[in-house]
Length: 192
Image (cartoon, rainbow, N blue to C red):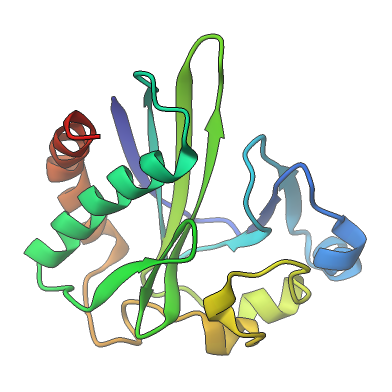
């Protein structure tokens, strides 16, 4: 299993293959501001990536796992283990692929799975001290949403670690994950 974490610097929009760009993204505003729009191979909703976010990528063999929820849960259990160890204890799994604090999303993720060769590619964005106003600026309300979103707008649905009182910088969290996440993920996958 390979684990890579990095700090996002540029603002960009990333969407899955089923996205209807005209209904999900304010394309004209993106063009006006020079914000690039990219398509990823994995599922999941359309996201804004920007500074103040930690991007986490995990790749590895599926080892016979065909249920995406098992992969999400194993990786999220490892992430939660590291976060809990450093005092971020009120964070939990929500929906299919999110982590949340008090019912507000703080991490969203996507997953790409291949049959041949049998591997997975997981990517998530952890909202450390990101500017949540960018979501309203570039994204329309999504056509599909997890039940716990309950039709809330971007800024009332999402939060950041900083807004929740945690003062870790993106660089500090990246270092913690670089040191500990791979071992945690490897342990969690052993029990799947």
